[in-house]
Structures are given as C-alpha cells and as structure tokens.
Image 1: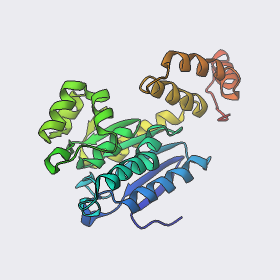
Image 2 (image 1 turned 90 degrees about the vertical axis):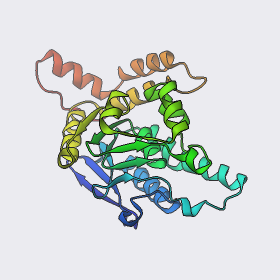
Image 3 (image 1 turned 180 degrees about the horizontal axis):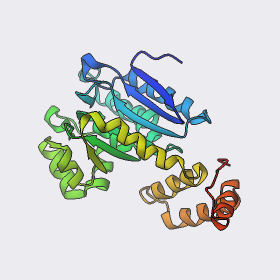
Length: 260
C-alpha cells in the first residue's frame, strides 16, 4: 500500500516506518495517524515482519507534535473525540501491539510525538534529540496518553514538572530519567536500533508476544499482572517454539524458532 505521509522499508524481518512530513517537522495530523494505523495493521498480519522501528524522516524531528492547525477551533466535544480516536487508532494500538515496536527518536519528539514514542515498547534517541510535552503552554493537556505513560516511565514528580513547565529535556537527561534506553550519535541511530532488533529476532516471537501482554497487564487498571504472567507462562508450554527452544538448549545447538 502507498502512503502520503509515511514511508516503509522492510529488510530482514525488520520494518522501518518513517513519518514523512518534513515541512511540518513530521507533525501528526489525522491523516498521518490513520496511515500509521493502516501500516501497523498490515504489519500485524504480515508474517515476514517480526520487529518494527518507528522514526521520523530527516534529522530534525521524530515528530514535533500534533498538527495544531487541525484542532485550534474545536469544541470540548470535538476535542474529547479527537483524543479518544487517536488513542484507539494509534497510541494504544502501538502499546498493545503483539510485535516489538522500537521508537528511534531523531531530533524533536514533542507533544504527540513524545506520546507516540512512549507508546512504543522502548526508545532509543540520537544525541540531538529534544523531548517534552508542551501542551500546557497551549492551554490544553496531553491527550494521547502522555499524562499516564510519562509518570510510568520517569516517575510522578518528574512527569509533573515536565508537564507543568512545558519544558524540553535533551537526550542525556532523558537517559537519566529512564525515558530512553540508549543514546547514540545521529548517524548511528538506525544502525544501532537495527542491531537491537536483530538481537530480538534471535528469540521466540510467540514468547515475546506473550511477554508484551504480561508486562502491559501490570499497568492496566483492574488487571492482575502476576496472574497474566502465570497464564502466559503456562500457555508457552503448548507452543512449538517452547519445544524447539528447550530441545535446542538440551542439545547445545542454536534454536530455529518456527514462530508457532
């Protein structure tokens, strides 16, 4: 499928999706959110895709925020619908995705851009990255999960400060805050991210999918994360990947997981 606001590249089971609106610093509008949803939905069904990398085109921005021109005159009802639809189509969809999604943050990740990166399973930043949730400077709050995911990642106090001040932090501060896992030089960002993706590819895709479900359960209201872990652990014993993994280990050879 061809897209207007994003581009895709599949190489060795790693799908790189780039948000590509350079004139708008890759800002998210409704059309881009819809295209990302469609690309991810397609990737979910594509057995060739094992790991996904989300990044922005160019070096200036991952995603510089939401496209404010789209909602500057919205009513409260329209604003609520905008947030609900965005979370359903993209941000929650990314967080709950059954295949690993890594955000490679190049340049600015602000507002909806940082919220998209936080929805990914983990984040890697280039050393020129700047991150923040500036929504309160516009008279609004983060609406794509920012008030929920930022405290989970950096702690309540730091999240309160970042949101209340509407300030930005650099890549090294983000690393110190545990907002990102690694910081690389700009030119090494995608190669470094792909190297981590290749390490993921060595392991059972079925087990990874179950691990994502179990980890996410700890952060969902009303769910018993330990109970989900027990269920997923037990479920693993009925998979072909478990049989292959244990057999390979006992026979001192490399596992060749069938993904079933």
